[in-house]
Structures are given as structure tokens and as C-alpha cells.
Image (tube, rainbow, N blue to C red; front, side, top):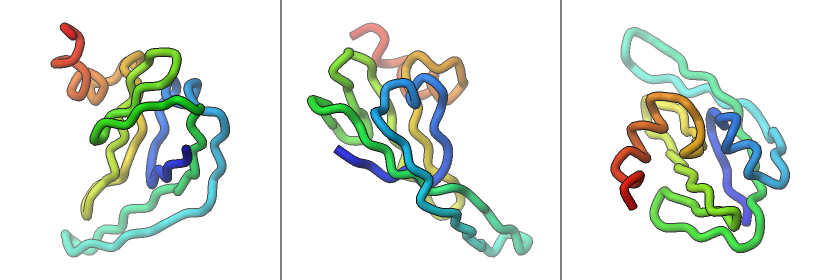
Length: 98
């Protein structure tokens, strides 16, 4: 399974992938003080047996990933429940009891 990430891939999420290929750069202009958002675009190959449920991906090793596809004013990211970042706490704190 391949997904595209238009932004950042966190370290533990990177360890769960088979292959990551940088396929380009993108600049997005938005009308908030003439700002420009620039980010890399990656093609990420995930292992066979991954289960997708909305934005969440469960790998065969049991690790949960969150794939934020980004929006008009933000870059996308791929983060793992093992990453130590406020975004990981935001997406996985309600799932830790499960």
C-alpha cells in the first residue's frame, strides 16, 4: 500500500515504513499577510497487512499511525503513537485506554 504525505514524517512512523521516496517540493500561497507554505512530498510504501480506519493506520507489528492529510493552511504529516510530540498525544491519548 502506498500513501502520499505532503509534509513531515515523524521518526517512529518512518521506522514502520518499507520505503520512502521524495517525489517533489510544493509551495502553497495563502492570503494571510502574503505568506507561503513550502513542504516536501513523499511517497510512502507501507507493509502488507496494514489496516486503515479513517486517518488511522495499524501496521502488522501492531503500531498505530495517524495520517493527517493537511489542509489549506497546514502541511500534512504521518505520526506514530510512539513518537514523543504533542501531536502524538493529541491523536492517541483517547486510544491509550483501548
